Length: 214
Ligand code: C5P
Image (tube, protein in one colour):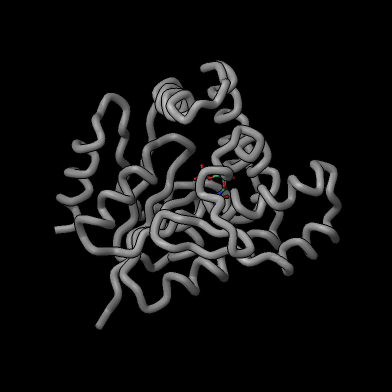
């Protein structure tokens, strides 16, 4: 049997994870949130401080265990699904994700999890690097204001004390680092279907994707 894989890429706050979870349920696919994996390792690195050196990061990486179980993510056996969404992690994750040896390790893990499964994987480099032969590739975008508004609302609901401007600035900085990094930057795959989610509700985007999956 040939496995189905769906790559869902795009900048921060484009709605990737919300949409991916719904599609995964509708189509009985395994959902893999690759951003959560970069966030988990960032959470661990931050425990050693922001000035941690490359050699130490290598050691942290080799001593760490990251597991995904449905929508839950575990770092060294501990559930960190909520903790990895902290603004401190969001502000630092792109600096960690641009390090090539970190990416190599994460990509290896992502491909391993995806092997022999029908998957929907969301991230930045899925269609271009992690799963270049994915059955379907989508690239989700939205205006920066809409993306920041969505993330701001989400963070407020979770009780984080942030302002809209802070969220918007953090997103712009993150997108810049993600787009400009040397190794597997955030980029739309040439064969990806682009969906601009600005002004669209979740169901509209889901329906659009389901239409292509028919
Ligand atoms: O998807 P999310 O916004 O949680 O991703 C957090 C960060 O992880 C991104 O801003 C990016 O720096 C990094 N990332 C990445 N490659 C992926 C997924 C996420 O570099 N495939």
